[in-house]
Image 1 (cartoon, rainbow, N blue to C red):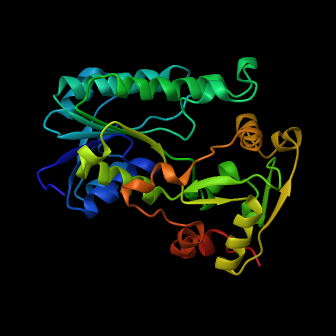
Image 2: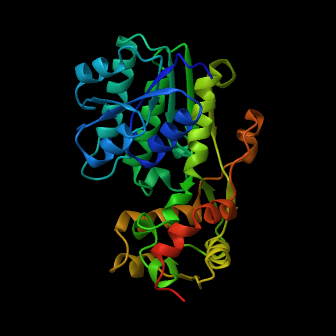
Length: 310
């Protein structure tokens, strides 16, 4: 990798951005992170890794442009849109793109989600069934990146992130996991597409290192395809503790375990799902991590977080 590179990273304190930061640093690439406050605990953790911090707001193009000055490339990601923040993802993506262009940046790597842009092909899409704002804004962010005129752009689309099985992240998607039960509206035979966050970082870092190879490439990535029962078996095998699954209805999931949107997302996985073709990214020479390898690597966190289980 070119040590003269300086990558500006959005979302550096989050799961995906943090993985990108780690992958870049591992390859001796200088990183500048956009933060809300340099004094926050998350920002200070980045600073401890020798990451340059710059305060900026994604609602303020001027601050983003100042943050981008001097950077050679940018990593872009935004939080998904849900009721309450409708329009925010599209606006933030457009602002970040505009700032990068104003600062003269010629390469951007953007992460989205598998199936983004394919939403109009979902079953019953015309009936407004699948939280339209989420998918429409994911697609709009991608289009903002692709249409901005960067010399080099890459779109990476991960599916479910394996970190959702680790405490305390697991409390959102699997609120009963601490009791050894993965209770969801998922059908028994539904295969889920999973990716390690580290692999998101690896693909992004390689895209920055080899812009020609990854130029104008839009692809999904997957590390494993497993039913929730298979995931429970792996959790049990790795930890020596008992994990089991149970399928419930959406109505049962909402009261009291799941937020309504989370419950509906499982129904989407039953009906549609991420449907990632492993061959999409096979040509880049990166072998994604399997679920078993990921759980083994994080065994100590699992044992600590689920210590009450037998």
